[in-house]
Image 1 (spheres, one colour):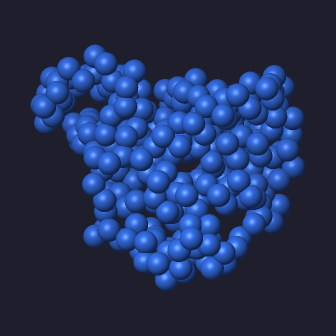
Image 2: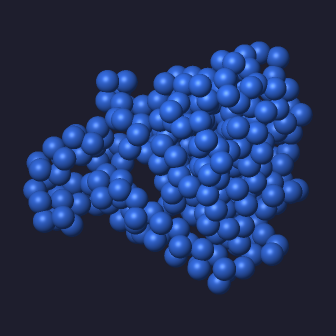
Length: 288
């Protein structure tokens, strides 16, 4: 995880305003006065249009942490995640909805999670007898925000998996990077095995279920949605960074891990120059 002093401006990251709108619904549930909640920002009318636009992660973070404090609810991330279904995630959710199996769905998430949550990277891999979907921030976050964000992410992905394959819920293992919230009803919310203090957020699935056919899969619809995801990803400012260009090329060639000299040749620059440019982005080829 990047060091705190490497933290870039959160204003450079844009996320769907739909997530802010869902957060506002949670605020209403907690009976927090909206005017008081929004008092720290300049645009008090932002909730009128945010569902159809993008907002800065900086704004979302400020309001999410304020909501958690005002509600005295450090488990706020679950309240947000519980409200999110596949349909909440735009074209990415539509692509996942039509995947043929969980391996295919995880691959879509791995490639395109940045169009919904650009601060998080996803990695899908097989480990021993399990299929693992891991989530980790690639830009340093405040500890409270990291917990809130990963809580919500794990729940919404778990919900998506069980929406695709309802029968496998009790065979999942959810791994939280931090300690459990006191007196929180995890079992009733997740209905599966839970592990805490795992360091990295992940969802573990028995290997044989990764390729289990999903009824209702629609390959043409999935392909069309993935094309839209790719177009949206390529319009993101961050896609022009070397780290993202490299990651996207590697995702297009699964199992191919060239050395730094080969990667540098893709951009017609030297290894040393590429190394310096990755350092300027607070990363390295090894981390990518």
